[in-house]
Length: 115
Image (tube, rainbow, N blue to C red; front, side):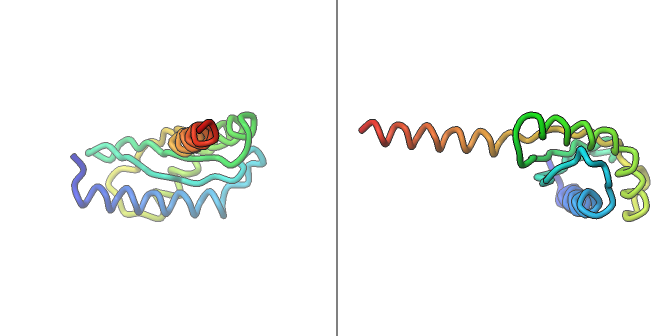
């Protein structure tokens, strides 16, 4: 169960990380990324960073590799920007919900065309 405090921490982390990716990371592998959500553990030691990437599978894998290699830099930025007892260890994960939604839309359009 997510408490209101944890939701605020997750949203603050999402905002700080999104800004850092857009303005402070210079890795050429990182393409157009949207941070969709952040889920932190109750003890704030771990955080799962869910992202979507605009582009094909190669661009997605390159971007995820770039983000994974920059996780230490992102943690340093979090430590600088937020007042937390512990800076969470980041795990970057791909959020496939948008891909799933687009696929469902395509299937519905095909079904509508078959009628």
